[in-house]
Image (cartoon, rainbow, N blue to C red):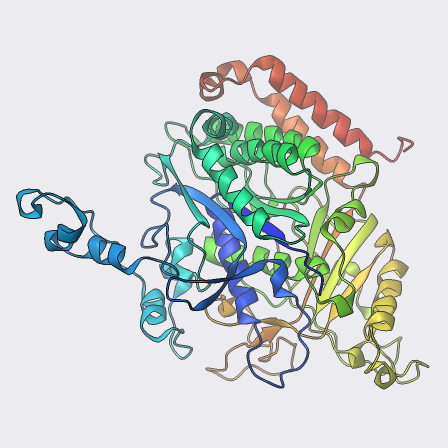
Length: 559
């Protein structure tokens, strides 16, 4: 099998919430039992194999994440996968534990030690038994205070990176501007150290495709990411697929009221989008909120799903569901003919249209078909898609890339169809005809000029700590709508999902709405940006760049 590794970057607190669910979902789908069938997912694209200091084989995400001081809570930066046992003893023991490590009398010095944070019950269970208590209710929706609280996948020691110059605490947080992040990368050692870790991962790869990046685009992480992209392009020249994340809450920045906070958000978003236009191969802004510029409002609605729109633990799980399904386009097994990351981006960014919209069908329920007219015709895009890109709506696209998982071939073929699904069992590409049928269906409703579809039979697993409580009781254990309530105590085990991205002219209005908000900001009164080096000329150039980018999506402009 050809190597086609991808390095994942997660920059920002909400990005790490989404990323934690993303890795948890993938590990929940690992197949260990013999005879469980041929796996459809090539996990080696995003995971790496290694060994810890005891010689045990490990399998960890090929990933680097960044957060602020205090955000890890109980998690060590080095993790516990490869950790040095003697170092752990020093950190947990008294002054006697220092005796073999230092040349002076340890009894004559005072040891100042920060109290270790209390681990949540879920993490304690993982430490003691190695698995979650599936019968218990960890109350994640009410108890999660950090993404480390529900982290199941264990990370490589180099994966976790902390910015010590800024605190995650709301009272002390000042990592609020694009220029804060940009200056942090340039002036300190962070950029150099982070770049070295990227290089270590790349050197381990046989044929690295490029980078997929999740990042918070409303605060200082937007500038940190922009500077990182500049270095990635200079150093490697590989494909960069970016997912700018807009959290569902607006938290006031230090010494800023809600009005000033909103203006800071708009400036950060404008600077970030302008940077992405130049430095990324493709970017897909996503959020569970319908509006995301000056303020966030109007949570997106999904059939048979109910969630707290301000809960990071639940909303990040929805976005991770979208990412886990969509990324199958470039991390499926060769038998499903996955796309190379650069091909995936090139198929959507023609004529410089680098911004795409995201859509999610959760759950995507398709009953067994008795006839073509009884089945697919009732599934119109407006009823199966929920838009995830803020300040935009589902509309006709130029190109759409779609992944559907959890759909059996018998749900696509009709009894009166000439195609026999059984005849495809031994085919090299068994889903080819099924994909074509779904592609025809979506194209018939004017979804896009081209609608390449990938279908996988395996649904998305729903295991602790995924928030299964968000799904309606009318869904059975495998995520299909039934005419009765699920029995009390019956847990969801899987869910069928549809995820797609589309390049659509409707995004012209999305970019225009951001430009309108950005133009209202009086930069001269924004001391926070002036202090960190943002000049009026630079901001004016950003506004013009947004206008030029908007014009690319105008139907009246001949491409």
